Image 1 (cartoon, rainbow, N blue to C red):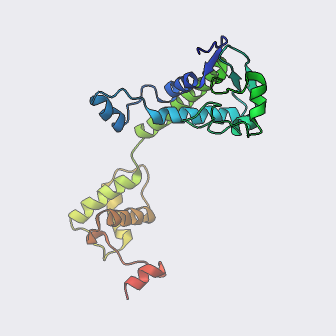
Image 2: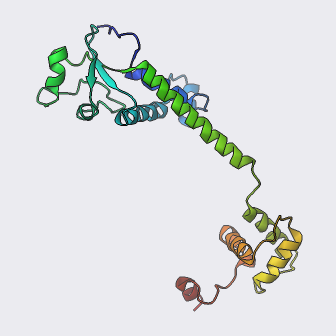
Image 3: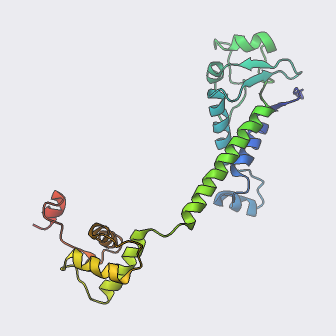
Length: 238
């Protein structure tokens, strides 16, 4: 039977679509979605929809969105409390979303049956459109802020550690320093060859050298642990 929705309400599928568009619209499809569409399968991004539904029910729990039930002839809408929505089996599940799994033996069955009769499979869960659109705008703003912050990080100057490691590579390749020599000597060369706003410290050079060894396992960057270093490192030297 066709549902007669009051104006200004959305069923779960419509609400999820609005939220999914705000969160994932414009983003590239996942690899599996792209592959399935190439072979002619008409598929949607289930992950995006699941994320949207999770956000929807989280908003219900925060009191930002109110959930209702409405019968197939437009009877209702019946306001559903947050606690009651948690007590309906699979109502919040991405693969559920209906009252059809609520059995007469459940204490929550009576609350709905008094309004809609014993057949709850035709009852729809709905939300106010204005609240869904407000939530979608909030999620879109959060997405833009995240992208803006990520863009600022990308446009900033490179990590100093990366620059120090590049200069250390030059020094070692030129054979003007070896791991048997002091860190202070290496630091002097790094500061002389690099272009730094402020001179780098011995500790910065030490961390960069250790990182180079961890990444490459090149023994040219390996140094004996400092006296009083980690017990495990010392044990390896025995």
